[in-house]
Amino acid sequence: MRRVVVDASALAAVVFAEEAGSGFAPALEGCQIYAPTVLRYEMQNIAWKKCRRDAGRSRATVEALDRCLDARRGIVWMDPNPSDVVLLAQVTGLSAYDASYLWLAGFLGADLVTADRALAEAHDAFARV
Image (tube, rainbow, N blue to C red; front, side):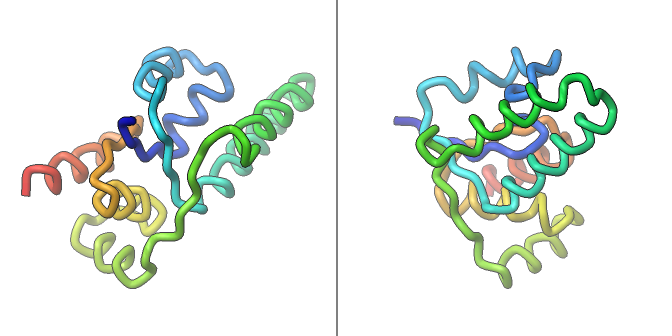
């Protein structure tokens, strides 16, 4: 089974049925999905912003969030090495949040699914090394 690390930008697009989500869903199909635990908090923050913008959709947004984060749904949660994440962020110029996805993908030898161009470019650069 192919392993992928997914970040909040891609997962939110799929979970909250955003226009870009249809482009990311196939990249996650049939894969074992991994994520750093920071993804939980990023997804909660995205859901909160969506609820603020459209209170009428709050219930649907929270239900989608709950389904996404349900432990039985198949995301394997991992904590990256904090020191490595800081060093990786320093080297790449990424935030520590984004560097945690990059670290995990490298640690697992997994593909990275992201809508974040800088993160994707960093992943591609490290994959060539």
